[in-house]
Amino acid sequence: MPTRLIKIFKQLWLAFMNLIQGKDRLFDGDDEVFKKSIQDIDYYGEYGMGRSTIWVIGNTRVKKVFAVDTSKVWLEKVRSNLNHANVLTAKWVDLGRLAKWGIPIDYSKRECIINYVESIWKHEQKPQFVLVDGRFRVACFLYYLATGAPGTKIVFDDYVNRPHYHLIEEFVEPNKTCGRQCMFVVPEKVDKEKIMNLMRQFLFVME
Picture (cartoon, rainbow, N blue to C red):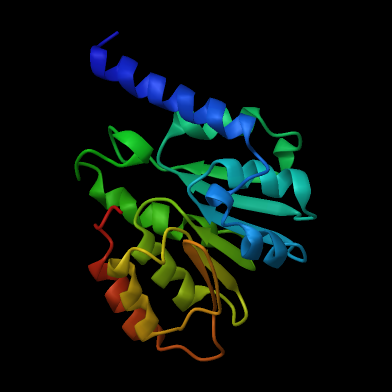
């Protein structure tokens, strides 16, 4: 096995062991808003899978979790640790070879990025609560801000200390803050055309 593949496998394995050993503690402890806000939700969506997936399915009354990830190996590892795997509908979007944290190493499959961004929306039941914690975060947030029903909650992880994300506040202000993350609520009226135009500008921004 090539050295690079061995290194990636070890990283995945260490991440997975960390995941199953501390699955009740989310987002390095910045999880109060997330845990409280999801308790009355039927349909939950997330960009990027992991400890949050396992916790939500094991500790809430959600009827369905819609998730997407760039790593098929990671997706299956998470699925294998679920007690109620039937609650999860997960999609793997093939964006080519990956570096750490599921980041594509190039844009060779850039035509598939939109599939990642749109994936959790393409179900009969629409998530009432969305976690943005994977790749293409600004594009994913803006897409759901434009398409989600008014009142939909969106938690944006790693938001507070990354000012390059904060341009989304041109459209909506944070509703709550908890450590490194903020929760937003889709307002009654948004400029969908303007939001989607900006979303397309960020479609190839991987972080």
